[in-house]
Image (cartoon, rainbow, N blue to C red; front, side, top):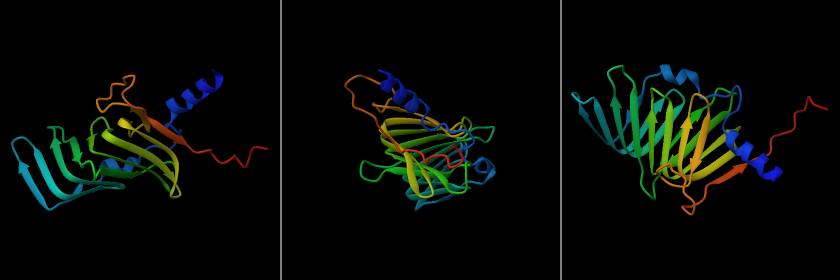
Length: 184
């Protein structure tokens, strides 16, 4: 039971490392998009991009088959990336915690709320943290909600985000951390 509680506490805290948050400078950068086609509805403030879509914003890189960007009157953007079962939508972003720390993820659909800085990954969802190009932690499930400000995420076994018994399992791989060389 004690081991179970220890593992549970580690999983609950997975993704919350003090001092290593998503790159703060990304919020002030312009959003650049490349695609095969774009449709824009000025009245509804909706951009729809299709065909090999690539979005960059500072250190953020997002790729998808289709992307819909809605903008509210305050200028906040709400981005939905669409992949498919064989070509997943994906993202990658540098973290503030060090020179070579990243977070990346993929899913059939990814929604990003610029105002709340929340990213939601639906169906075949997977995220991992990287340090110096090596994975430190990995999680998989049908739904992942990721708070990019706090670097906190939750993983569920259904694409709706509701955990149900018998609906599948989540998977987490937690790599051992290098021993602190100062502690002896």
